[in-house]
Length: 299
Image (cartoon, rainbow, N blue to C red):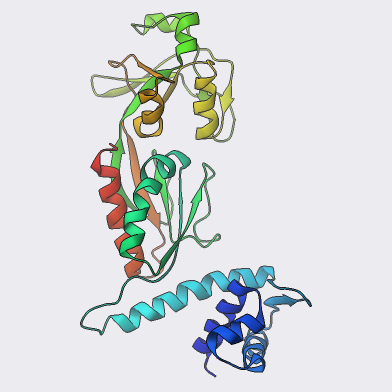
């Protein structure tokens, strides 16, 4: 049995959590399945699976090896397809991270059509404001909204998201509607900082093509998008946010847009991926689709 076959068997055992079920699905003797995994463990000199009478579970090394197996076996399938007249449908796993608001408002609603076109593709979608480590955590790509810090990753621009200023109706009832920057002296801002280390510079706006900040006070600083929006809904102050993230809330009347002449600069949307190898076909197709989605009516 060659290494590719061993990896394929190990992947199925990891997914099913059972040597018996794997043997049944692959039409192999149970002893062959067990030997394939044991040979892998011997070759790698690590324990990949913990065996109990009821369940087979991945060790930490096994979990890391499983993620790489999924990627490598899918790439192997794509390599074979390069020499076919009509390439087969995309298959394998894509592991993607993106901000919660982008996933909820733009990407997930559009996913059914994409997956219907590629029924053999499985997407593992992480949605968090935490800056994940693409390499260490095994992601194929991450989507970032905002300015990028320097890194060794490849960055591809996808779009620009308009920003809007929002408050809740209850906030307007209590503090009134600001019409000018000077009016902001009697208003509060909800601050956003990923590390909760200090406060941002204040209310951001564009003037003569330059970014400026109007100093403001505020009672709360948050470090993720959900809490940022929740603070605004609770009447704690003004937020400045990509329009895509609050579009439904504005349409429902739960948030109100204010100060349209004083909006923050549009936020760039980028996809980042490692350059350690050529883009897989499934990732390239997904990125092209994602760019069309975010540029359709979300910018």
